[in-house]
Structures are given as structure tokens and as C-alpha cells.
Image 1 (spheres, helix red, strand yellow):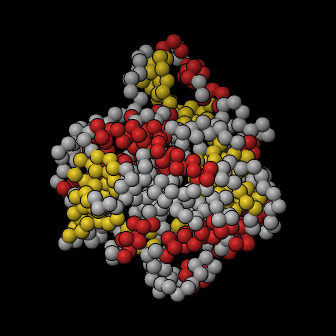
Image 2 (cartoon, one colour):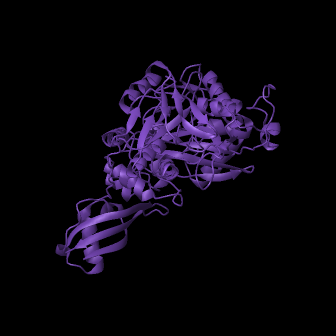
Image 3 (cartoon, rainbow, N blue to C red):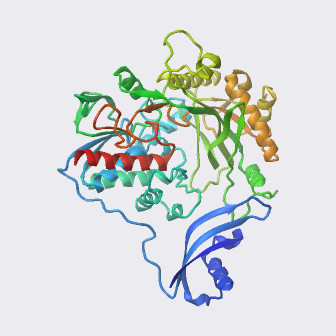
Length: 536
């Protein structure tokens, strides 16, 4: 017999199969000798009160053994000689699009501007060691996309868009821990995700697909309002009647090519702010209501903060417990910060993005007028003036300003949190996980007022919500700008094709239709299905 139970138990009971069996046997009057195995289906932590509980949904195998496979296996047939589909980008959107195409009997040709996931790691190390950013191989570009070396969090609210469980099962099939199937906030970890990505690539190649690294698309080939392929640096051409464009949110050259070639795009709202880094022990103490922190059985604590300040949302983003702040610039004269966590989440610090939402409006404004996008909110944001690349240009200006404030290196401008709120310069800074180094800077002064002022009020609010959160032990690090794409590539809601060009499928986060690894993967699968339908 197989039975499912909903349990609310103490942490020390929740993380050992035998104690879970004991609890089920005692609570439901079962002979423990008949419970052959227990499989956790869902796990979440309830830390709202001083007594912490773990909520478990479990499946108990009573007088029978469980099936061997803990995940659903997907078959990938050989697609050599089948009709090709070009997939531009090897991030989660592109990889899952390629895998889904193979399922459907089509041959993916994956074209990636960056390097394979292991070679890319060396270029990422150079950013911290030498302050050198390779424009084609960095935290944004390369196999695995922006998620490969920035955490691997799989939590998504996009459950209405597609099958989240399918995505998680495919990750498990390629080497991810099956714990992601049960955790409320699943997470692979930056240390383990590269191997999973490499296994996905090997599945594509084994099935007869192609993967081309260091192959940068320079243009889309279009004939009579339909796609016929792409061209790349060096003159190589890949021809196909369907192109899935999954280039990620930092491929600004792609946006400029689309804009200059009159392919319909629009500005999209983004969120901009800083990385906020606390000692992990302090966050554990606050979230678990215990001066001793998380103890032996609980994971590094997470938090989620949100409020409204002067009509705009201010909220935490991409919270990384026990993680690191990393340099996420994708080109010269930029300082961009992001966060990541290893699978163990056992680092000394915890960080999250703290951002202010900035809406975008479709009405164009004249280019080249010398308007300062950073300082003058009134004519550009409040009155709704903006063109397709307006938010992208805003990002670029803010990242360049952070680079200047950081000493024109990858050193990041930073300020103690309480000093930032009080408008005081920090004469020294706490230790930090940010390996290129920090430089004390008055972020309260040079951040655009419509961002900085809202962040300061937001921090005050969060400090009232969580005693001890607003502290000079925490550090504000600038700037966090790559929360999502600043551009949306317009597509039809039903066919997912570009609104004018047949066979062009804008996909994932870079196209403005996703906001993380899982939602990008779901969108990749959907685009693959629509491309297959078109070709059929």
C-alpha cells in the first residue's frame, strides 16, 4: 500500500528518514516494520513563530518497495537528418528549447557566442583576479547563460505558463539532486550546475543535434517577411525555416541590431538597485528568532522583503543565503553586481538584490538631445517618454557611473547600510564576499534620487519589520541592474512568433517573456513546440 501524509514536525525530526518513519508510525498507529520507505514530495520551513516547524508532504511505502526512479525520465530520439531549427543562445531557454525539439523529432543547431561552461570559468576568474572582462565570456555570456554561475535557483511563480515539474525532472535526469523535486525553493547550486549543463549539451550531441561555441550571431536572415537563417562573425551561415532567439537579457548588440533593422521591439520595465550583504549568521538569527542562529538541522535562512515607496515597489530579489556577491559585467566600463550560492549555502555572508521597480512607456522621445537619463526622472519616466532602447541605455549609464565610482576597475562602490540610510559616508567597510574588492563611496549621493531615496525608505521599513536587519554590519554594494530584460521583442500570443516575421521565435528572459531559470526553460519548451508546429 502507498499512502501520502501531510506532516508538521520539528526540524530535528524532518531531515532523517528514520525519524520521519517513527513519527508516521506513532501518529497513524502503524507498525514501523511495515514502512519500507518514505519519499518526501514537498518540503517547506515555517519560521513565522519562535518555534520553527517543517511542513512535509510524504509518500510512505507500506509493505512494498518504492520504484527505482525518483524522477520522470524523458526519451531523446536520434534526429540526424531531420529538419533543422536554429537556437541562438545556450542559456536555459535555448537548452530546453533544443531538448524539446529533439523530443519532437527536429534537429537543433545551437549557436552560442560564449565558451563552453568549463572554459568560461577561467574568464570569470580573471574578472576578480585581473579586473578584465571578456565581452564574449563572462557571467552573462557562455554555455548555461546568466544562471550557470549565478546561483541556480529554480523557484518560480510562473506555474500557469507550463509544466514546472517537467523542467525539474529534466534537471534531475541530467544530474541535479532529486531534492529539487521536493524543496519549496529548489536550488541546484553554482558548484553543481555546470556539470548538469554539460550533460544537457551531451544529450543534444548524442541525439544528432549541433552545438557551436564562440559563434556570435551578427544578423538574422530574412526573406519576404520570414526567417531563412542567421549569419555569424567570420561569415558562417546557418540556414533554417525557424530560429529560436534565446540570447539572454544582456545581449545589447542583438537589441541594437533588431532596432536598426526595424524589427518591432519595445522598452520594458525593469528593477534597479543594489546588492545588500549581511553576515549569514545575523540573517539566521533574525529569521529563525534565535540568538544561536540556525542550529544543526535548519538551512541558511532566506528572506523576502517588499514594500511600496512613493508609488513604486521596493523589494528583495534573488536572495542568496550563505552565498557570494559576484561581478556580473558583460563588457568594458561597467560595474554590475549579482549574487550566487553554492549547493551547501554555507558561506559567511548572505545577500540579495534590493531594487526599485521602474516602469517603461511606449511613447518615443527624440534621440541625441543630451538628456541625462540618470538624473532627470520628470520628463523621461513620469511623463512616459521613452523609446525602445530607453531602459537599456539607462542601464548602461548607471553601470558606467558605478564603474567610475569604483575606481574604473571591477572594484565595486559600497557603503554600510545604516550610513546609506542616514546619508553618511562610510569611512571603512565590513568584510565582504565580493572578490574584486570594495571601495567606500557615497551611494546615497550619486545614485539617482528616484532610486536611492526609495531604497533608503524601503530599508527603514524593512528594519522596522525585522529587528536587526537595518545595521552597519550590512553593506550596500552598487549596482544591481540586470534583474530582467530592458527590452521586449514583440511576438504573437498564440503562435509565439514575432508579430511580423514568420519563423522567428523570441524566447525567454532576453525576449522579455521570462524571469529566471525555470520560467526561461518553460518558455524555451513552448517556443520549440510552436516552431515544430510551424515546420509540420
